[in-house]
Length: 170
Image 1: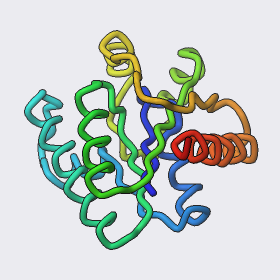
Image 2: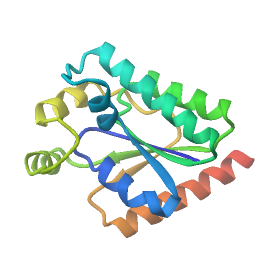
Image 3: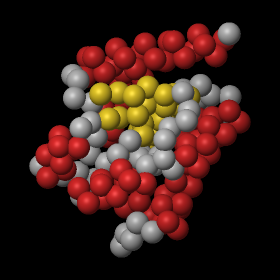
């Protein structure tokens, strides 16, 4: 199974992904971690982003081939990247689920300003830029309100997975 967490910086993708690792017996692949492993000095250029996503997909494929559940954690701000991960999942015949993490801008700003020991380097200006550039999610997805508690979030994810599985069988 492939869970694809997407959304703007500071919305809680990584925090939720970490809580779900044990629930889904999954590997967590985070674009921020990969970026830091690939680049000593990060520029966030389009070329750099492309390399990060390519590595993310390469690692995802390796894990899925081992029949490991994977939680992908990245903004997936461009439809192009979302389409690529769909192609990968279909090629490997793995069920996949898009989960968009959402949160009001004022709460995101508070979270970003209070971050400590975060892998993400995105500040509120990056959030605002990506908010303008974020392409609509055309894939079937769960839009998850990240201001809810974990129990509610987990229940909604389970319900979404169950409902989506049934729809794919029809």
